[in-house]
Image (cartoon, rainbow, N blue to C red; front, side, top):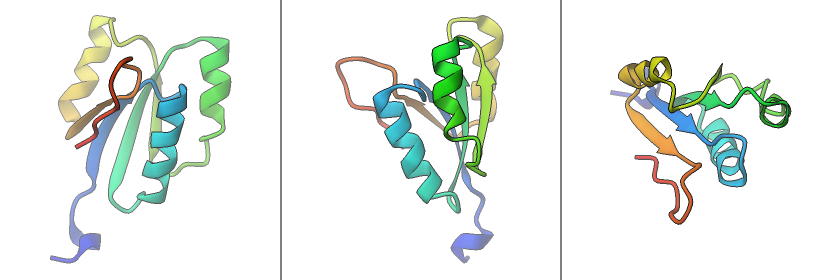
Length: 95
């Protein structure tokens, strides 16, 4: 089966507006043929401004909220991968 015929991996990304998160988003943008990204972004003015630089990224969907809020945990159900770019002390792992 050709790559174009395969389904894209669906990634849930937290911490998208931080340094690591923005780096990861740029990488996913370059791999738009392979990944669809759902980013959970805190609804703060700083984070809202930071995520706007990616508003033209075709394979990115943004949901505003906090991962500790129970309703947002349901977003994980439809994703193939979790990429927690906000965790301190370790490099993000997106597999």
